[in-house]
Length: 144
Image (cartoon, rainbow, N blue to C red):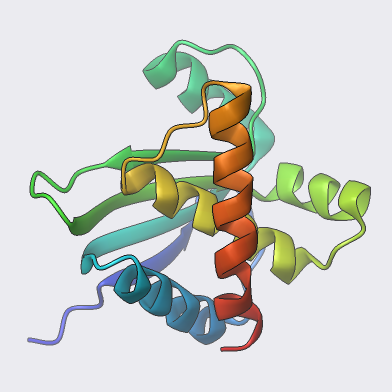
């Protein structure tokens, strides 16, 4: 049985995510470059309201965010988890930072994957390192 390791879903929104193949290839390349194995990765696009509720329920943060990642790997160097992305927030970020929607979707997916790989961004120094890693790997998504 050939189970898909990367799957895309929507929750409480009607938008369809285009270019899934391009995103899938970028994810696969990122995982290889970081010397991880790909387990099962679900990427769920949702509304601001849905993700804020998740943020409050599971992380005890009562604010909007663009991405939340849940690590289900259980094994070191195997990437297994879920990444929830607010498409509303990503659209607003793309407009604010004057980048394409696809570029911003790639960036938040990278951000979520880096969290699943153990990176944190709780201090300014760690946030800067996270941004550098995002910038380093965004080309995998643009050129895939």
